[in-house]
Length: 248
Length: 381
Image (cartoon, rainbow over all chains, first blue to last red; front, side, top):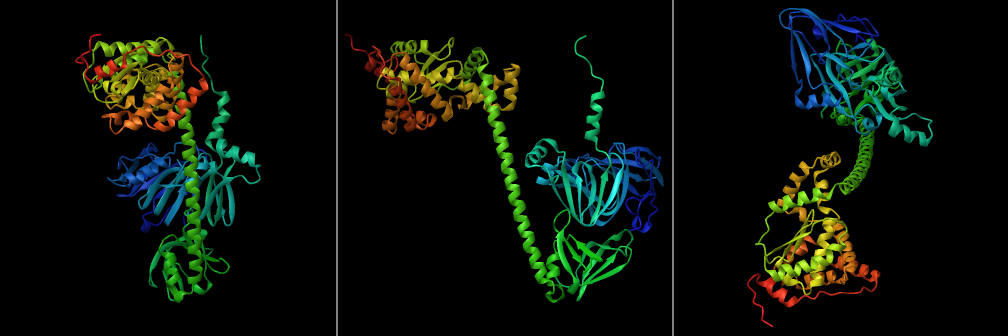
């Protein structure tokens, strides 16, 4: 696995049809630049494309059929995935995620990666993206009932709000649910209330907060966490918003 | 699964870059052979293999070497059974233990799911009850003019199942009964209007706003004007308690509640007509029937009539139900007769002695006319 997730530059082997890519302006306003050889493709979330060569053709569609598309939609992504193909010769394109933050590359080797809703940016051919029902875990996590699941063999790019930390979990690890960006399929996880809270506070956080809920990972694998989350930032900004007064 | 099958999975080892790699695994004679996509080969003898379940799905099988220097993993559902059979059953015991664990975990998660669902259903029911309360209250706040509009339109679109009766004997008798009851109606200002319909149905119903339909079959079956008064009082109560509108609101659900709160009743009228055409507007639930019985008892007592007459009418219905043609109509739209009789008699007793002022109607004459409206000949005195 020569191209680890945190690696910035990825001149990967042509045999596996890996994408030549570069992630610049990290970590706050990261931009993904991809060089496509003729005939090569990349699939990206709608409105991510910032620039592209005239040799590249864009096609929008529901990749993977209605089932997978609905799964993606429940996972906080669009029904539609844009496919960029270097049809008329090699060319490059720049992809920008919606939120300010970092972009990470991950090379899938027949395994799966679980992504938090909204963190998908792009993937190469050979990768399937669908929703994964979380049941009660999702119901109480405050982050949605469905996680995105990327599986197959190929390149995957995901983004965060804020910078990204990669954590190698070898035993147990706790992460606040809202900070989880992605994790490998070898990790087992449960959602629980922060240990040590009084029973009353537990109930309060369970039903009204969403805050204080943690993902408890066990087993071995990598977890990517973001250094900021959007909701507390919005709360922090809120008092400074200009408010229109009623009346004259 | 035979030895030699291959499975897609992965491995953890310090010897591969990044300590993790995707791999293809083969179940050999003595152990599991794994080859990464970059061509590195690993082998884990069955005798040293420690099995474990886990992963994000909870269904990934991990095979650890003694000091966990090598871990092979695979999510293929066929992998675990194949491991049990491979290598002359060396891992069979561990595999059966894991299979049991998986079953137990699945059972627990199913139980949790069912409990979760139950909680969601209970919360949903609570919200529904709350909503029903809101619609009932919002209907109380509506002007009676809306009931009248809805009732009038429903009346026009309803199939009356017989010709309207103009026989003066019947009309006067019903008018007299109504004039005794009207001053004691629960809601002032409601215009009650009785339409007598010549049909063998032993039934009567009331539409919102006070439009009452009374069939000659009921007049024939009743043994006294007080019994008819009981039935009419009961039907009037449906109107004054606004059961029809509440029924519409419940049928329409949230949209109706919003419409009612915003005061837009056009949708309401359309639904009323629709319900009336299916005869649903005249059918009430048990709660509404009981409420109307209670109100009828109060009205009759206030009008100087024995409230037990309504219960007596129920008895006739029960006894002669099979003989009286069309009696099934009243029975089907007014269920639980026995319990309702009991309730009516208990409430009458609680009211104590009433100064009774019976009707001075010639009921035999009325019954005769009910049999042949407009044609019955009365003997000259």
